[in-house]
Length: 132
Image (tube, rainbow, N blue to C red; front, top):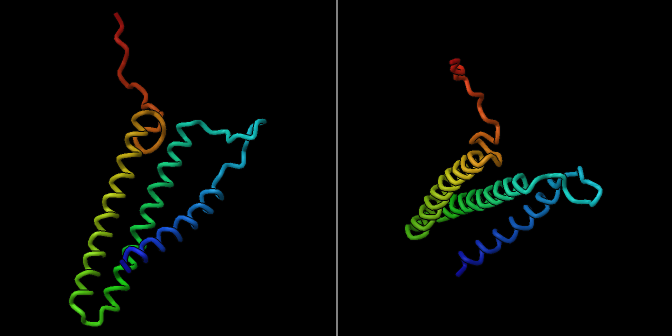
């Protein structure tokens, strides 16, 4: 119960911090109507990347929490094992988040939306035309 309370407290504090950071990243260039001058695809890419960054922040905080808990276990085997489990799960979470970021950016790039998979920039066709 205590662990869930601390995790909830960490999540809510991170949520409040990232909300301010997300508002600070809003584009300043707006058209006459007052809407951002970006496409839906670009907005979707930004939302997904912000979401992945948010989840990665939570995983790093869990890793820090596990490290602090391990340091303060003071030889208590049960507390040390629980801290090791938190650290292990946080590391696994970071690996999954990194893979998810790669997959999302590759899929969005392949769809021509943006990301690392091409970003809509097609490679030129280097095959020579066949003259008949």
